[in-house]
Amino acid sequence: MKASFKVSLLVLLVAASLLMSRIPAAKSSTRIYIRADGSIYPQDAPILSEDNVTYILTADISESIIIERDNIVIDGFGHTVRGFGGSVGLNLTERSNVAIQNISVKAFQHGFYLLRSANITVSGSVIVNNTYGIWFSLSSSNLVSSNLVTNNSYGFVLILFSNLNAIVRNVISGNVYGIRLDYVSEQNIIHGNAIESNQGGALFILSSNNYIYHNNFINNVAQVQVSGRFQNIWDDGYPSGGNHWGDHALVDVLSGPFQNELGSDGIVDVPCIIDVDNIDRYPLVAPWSPTAIAAKVSVKPDVLNLGVKQGWVTVYIGFQSGHNVGRINASKTMVNSTLSAESSRVIGDYDGDGESDLALLFNRTLVTKYICSKGLTTGNIVFRVSGSFFDRTPFVGYCAIKIRMSGDVNIDGVVDLKDVLVVYLAFGSYPAHPRWNDVADENEDGQIDLKDTYLVASNYGQAYA
Ligand SMILES: [Ca+2]
Ligand SMILES: [Ca+2]
Ligand SMILES: [Ca+2]
Ligand SMILES: [Ca+2]
Image (tube, rainbow, N blue to C red; front, side, top):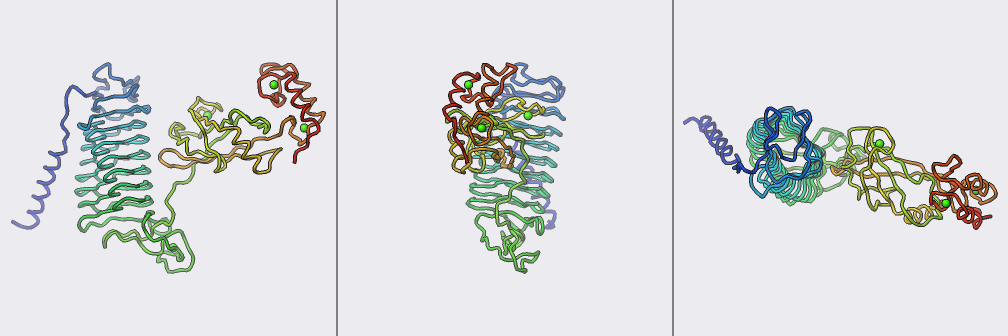
């Protein structure tokens, strides 16, 4: 037998055995179908569609979902599809142009199963506790972005000629293996992912010509393993750079494409060598992070009486379009890098721009204490609100509010007749009243009465810096 024929035969045998062994067994009684004609079976499954294009989950599901229709969108609305260790969560065999978003897929053998599938998008989803989080075989040109992929045996498996897929901006942590590319899977792009605390970050078997850059490989027992001599590309050239390697030396006193000129440039001066065929020529000194998205921020109350020591300051966060505020990691959102939110909820469209907003509640006593610690009593303060989405895409927005001390309702730094006059002119009013003036409501109880007059009078003569 000629050597090349032997190799081809071997390839076929291995391919066949992989295919056979990987086709998951299933029980017919535990399946929901989205049929090729757009119908849903069984009819009482908690999936709704008005137009046979967009399918929405209305409850958690403990069955497999078999997708037999192309050109559709499946929105989990945060619901969970849960297995019991076997079978497939979402079966996308031979599908094209299916977008899946905002779904949790837990405890299956295969969370997502792509076989001969193309143009599938999985985004904004949570993929946890599966044997294989997302399984691609013979599947090309798919996009998996902005998902949390954690605690699986394998986060991603791309196998058997699965080419030209993009794995972008996912958080891939706590898996046995984060990503496995196997059996001639080539020209895949792995970009912008946080690959952290896995046993193995990425495993490459018989696969070459993949592009892996701008990822953060941090705290994996083995960052990358490549079996055999297969070459992949680990950087995006100079100065765009390669990946951040948490365990790589971080010396940066040189710059330039050959790192032989004086001056630092954010690129580690020595390459990160995985093996002779796999070299990140331009490792990043700092973890890679995407550019922050501009948020629209507003604050209530927009005039903050520093004399009031209770209640909440509410910060509303919205975006121009295309960013789901429900995906903000609220507990990591901060004002001026100092104050953290205590609770959050997505509200309707607070500012009327057609996009939902997130309301974050900040402890007003702590906000006041913070402002006073800056020596501020009267005038403007800028709130810088920064945070990130669950996929770690950062956002930042700014809002100026006014601050004043008790009694100084016209915010000029002294409590005098002018303040008394403001209260007097609004006396007896309430929010719907024509003479209502919210600054005169010194005790913020929704009516302007003797209590407010008293509070101003009791601060009469005070002057603030
Ligand atoms: Ca350098
Ligand atoms: Ca809005
Ligand atoms: Ca005043
Ligand atoms: Ca009042």
